[in-house]
Length: 191
Image (cartoon, rainbow, N blue to C red; front, side):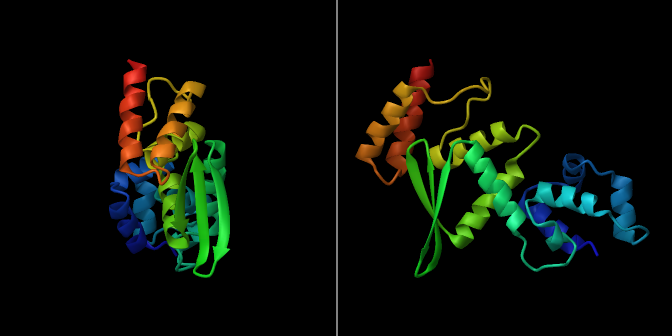
């Protein structure tokens, strides 16, 4: 049974309207209204399309689990991160799994809860051009700068990677100084 209360909560969380959800999921408003009124039941593929847009496990929307992040979301996010050029290393420490994500020479550390939230955000941000969306997400999340939209073939040059490495030496934790300096320098270089 489709849980409309969970859909409503996820719409708010993702800052989406019902119309935007249905459009992105390729579902008709008429079908959605029939599901909501109980006149028909959605197919598993319809539930999956809604879940993919909302970034949750389809079983969560169908009230088959109380966990919104199933393995499928994490696996899809891991594939997208790898496709975008990020390395993900998982270490089990006393406090639980610790995830290290390295993107363009900068490493970020996540606990299990934060990593699942990152996976949710990444899967939610993916569109038809998944690689481009994943690279854009990585640029914004790990480098603090947006992917250059006008040039989808943009990747860091050797000169830019050298610049990143130099800033990493100054700020090995990848904090604000690195991000703001890198953004300023990349903008200057692109002019």
